[in-house]
Length: 151
Ligand SMILES: Cc1cc2nc3c(=O)[nH]c(=O)nc-3n(C[C@H](O)[C@H](O)[C@H](O)COP(=O)(O)O)c2cc1C
Image (cartoon, rainbow, N blue to C red; front, top):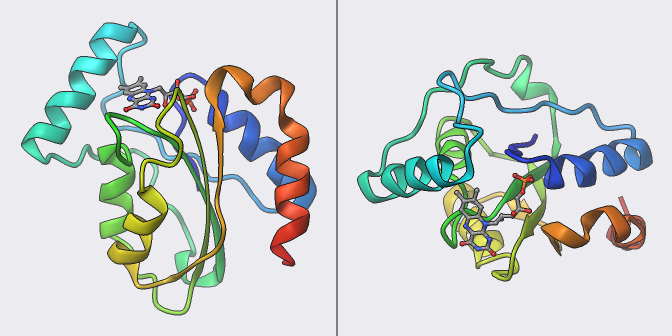
């Protein structure tokens, strides 16, 4: 399960999918985010300030069939993007295990792994945070992290 605006987190997801065989479901915003960086920053900040959860264009099918969910996202304004928060709030997490991973430009995981634990009550395994600009040259970190999860 993935949200990625500029593709850094998507690269991590693709590596993870190769390793694990997991399908990739990519959350799409019904109203696409601007491709212009400043416009995207502004929209994201406004959503966070006003606590609005953008509509998702492509609801996931067969949610109940998944026990383990790798959840990938970038840090936006020190948090989970509101579109990801909305997805999390709208789904049942009973009995599921979340494996979080994210990219960022300095915030690390920003406390989002703890937030996911609080929001869902699910089992949240050790996450992996990589700086966005380093993702392409650091995909071996995805390999060693995945191997250490014992899944
Ligand atoms: C709207 C917006 C807000 C961001 N806020 C933060 C932040 O608070 N902390 C941080 O470390 N990086 C922040 N970033 C940088 C992204 O987390 C980083 O570029 C990430 O790798 C983007 O992932 P993506 O290519 O999957 O979209 C922000 C980027 C955007 C577009």
